[in-house]
Length: 460
Image (cartoon, rainbow, N blue to C red; front, side, top):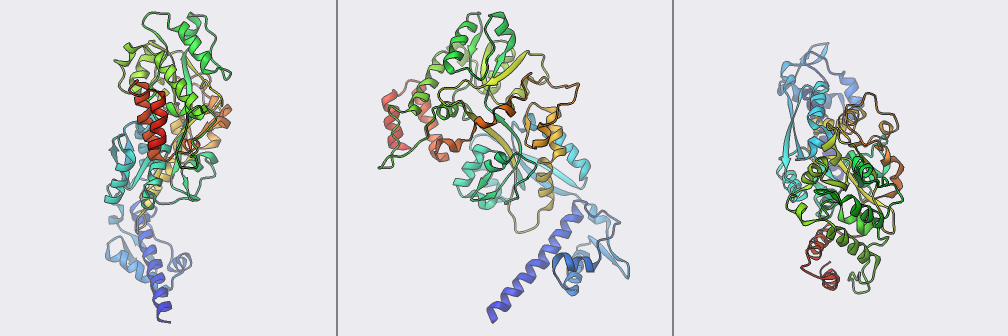
């Protein structure tokens, strides 16, 4: 009896606190503006399942905070204090501005919700997921952007307990919602996505009388034609940063195999198709002249070389093609060349909320906005990135288009069946990063093929 009484009391306090926090947030973010009247007490009784006495108690709390004033026989009116801004701290990567024209989105969000001020907190790419976890624990961010690779790391580190679950958005491609799903719960609102494709300079192909790539190209085709394109001095036929976590996994995915432990829990890839994919990745690297290596520190350097005509073909995401959106570069895209399985890697970016005991209406408004059709239309008009809202991608792009998009921009719709996420490899985030380090040693000739297989058996 006593336990049930306390339990009922706890539920009452929780419902009362929920009403107070919800109304406070609605006032601060401008849902109820200064001078406007709140709904009647009767409406609140029905909405929150509380008694009239409890509703009056909640409203008295807001009166004490100076957010509303009660007018006898009229109702509760929002005061000028209710016009103060709510601040949302948004954690972002350094590349997010190019990916989704964040400044334009926040400007538009401000016109819709003038009482919400968004402060961006830039998080460095190195150890992004662990930094996100630290920022969430310390309350330094209310919301944040993340990609599909970061999400797996957060899930495996147990950090999703710090992230607010949300409902899957039916307007968004189902496979994108699934990218941010863990234990049947969704933890991010997808914003943009991209397959890894082959970008190429059309002028180079015409000059050397090389047929433009298509979905039938194998890596043998790509290497053969790259050799022809490389005959021009100062030009490389095929070049990209193999060490990128969005590039080298493609070769393993295309092997048609995933990592499966043997009876002893070890990964033995000797003689496997996985090893064949790794061997191919090294062949691609050995065809890339060393002179380019001295000029490259990150993917942006590759994009600069491609724009300047020093590279004819490269693996790229749609997001990276934003480097050319204001240029006159004559380029196009094709499906990535394949080994055994003509698949490619899926890259997605979403937005998440920090889980709190209090209602964080302002942060939720921002995350919902970033995944909305209105925001995604701005992304589509201002970038080469692909919006997550399905209906936008099924309508033609408005003309004239100010963006230098590849002629085959809609390719991503044709090859959706080929999309694979990192989970295809059946590796934990920790094993994935460890494998990347071992491959770097193999590509650099610090270990040979037999040593690579042995270290994978020992360490993965």
